[in-house]
Length: 157
Image 1 (cartoon, rainbow, N blue to C red):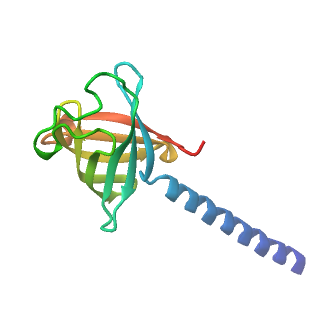
Image 2 (cartoon, helix red, strand yellow):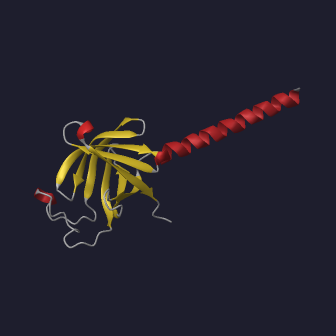
Image 3 (spheres, rainbow, N blue to C red):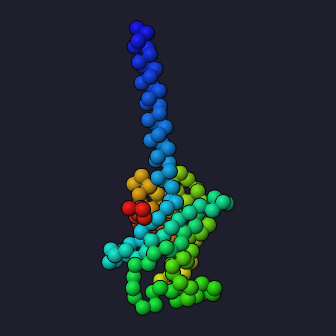
């Protein structure tokens, strides 16, 4: 009987460790921090890779680290205005101000669309165990915006 009790305790401890380990893995993969491939909704071709990181003020930011298109003039933000006009796309910060609003969701942010130079309000939501990122940009109410799905990429492989 003591053997069964000891076996039950050991099994309980093992299950606890497995649960804690799987929870820790899920919570780190569900963050938008990392590298994301942006795909053109019409052609299905990759447009860019965005690096998202968290600042010391717990704000998410994102910048362009790779541009796939080779079209003339597409390497600079020619549609942007003010100090962003004609800035190189490579290294350009396009996401800012995002704060955690709900589990797996960030809001109150801004998204620069280098194709038209407009700055939109935006929200982010991780899905598919952190492998996909729904980026919703809008003016006014989020319901009237547009959503894109970005795919997480591993730059080390």
